[in-house]
Length: 158
Image (cartoon, rainbow, N blue to C red; front, top):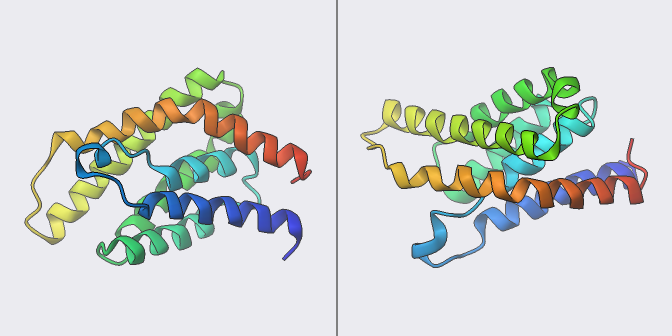
């Protein structure tokens, strides 16, 4: 593994750490989907390096760290990585704010699919307040995009 590849994986590990970091319950529903945001960025920027396989592994780590059904988030993140990687040329041509709307829609897809899988496997009920994280992911996107782009250019990751 080269130094450049290690930077990609370190950003994904940092996103996992932000995902499991404790927050007060009153604001935990507003937590952005950090892993999703980082994966979407890397799938758009470098689809040949970060793709469905990396998303699957990240999803397994999310499942293990958060105590979810093993493979549920792996499947969802792999689907989203496929969508982002397959359309990376189109998404790159959008402005950052248009990309933020796409990230918000993918985050809504993430949460709705997560609910659907949980409802299929258990007796989970739909909670509309879980959709707030899609809005915060959308609002975080411009700053995450700028930061990850700066990292990519500084370390010349291609």
